[in-house]
Amino acid sequence: MKRFSIPTQALVITLIISACGGAPQATPTANLIDLQSTAVAAASTLVVETQAAIPTATPPLPTATVTLPPIPTSGPTLTPLPGGISFTPTPVETSSPADPCINKVLPNSLPGQTIKISIDNPTKAKIMVSVYLQQSNPQSVCGYRSYTLTAGQSLVINDLVEGCYTLWAWNPDPKGYFMVTNGTSCLNNSNSWTFDVSTNSIKLRE
Image (spheres, rainbow, N blue to C red):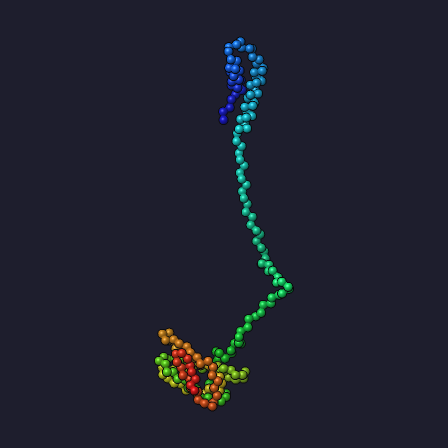
C-alpha cells in the first residue's frame, strides 16, 4: 500500500486548483495557512481511508468439541414387568436322576434266583459286549459285566440273576465300527434266554 507524505498532497491539490482555472488569469495570492489546513485535512482523510481499506484478520473458526456421553457406572436398568409380575429363576431338572450303577462292576456272587443267558455273535468281527443289570429296588444288586466275543462265537452265562438287563455290543475296529443294543429285557429263571447280535441290533430269540 503506497503512502503519500503531507507535502506531496499539498502539491497535488495546488496543481488541481490551477488546472480548473480555464484560460490564463492572474494567479491569486495563496494563503499559506489555508493551504496548509487543506493539505492536512486531505492527508488525514487519506490516512483514514487507507486504514479502513486494510483487511482485518479473520478470527479462526471455533474448533468443534465432541462431547461423549458419560460412561455408566452400574449395570443396565431393567424395566419392571407390568402388573407387578415378577420372574423367579427355576432350576433345570434332568429327566431322570443319575444312575449310581452305570459305572459299577457286578460282584462275582449275586444274591437271587440264577438265570441262563446265551449271546451269539454271527458277525465277522470281534466284538465287545456289556451286560448291564438294572437296580430294581434300593436293596438289590446292580452293575455291569463285560465280555469279548470273537467272530462266530457263542457265550453262555450261568451266574446272573433275575432282573432287567440292557445289553450293548460294539466293534472297536474303526474300519468296521458299529454299536447296537437290545433296549431292556426283563428275565426270570423260567427259561433260557438267547440274544443274537448283528451289525444293526441285538434281538432276544423267542
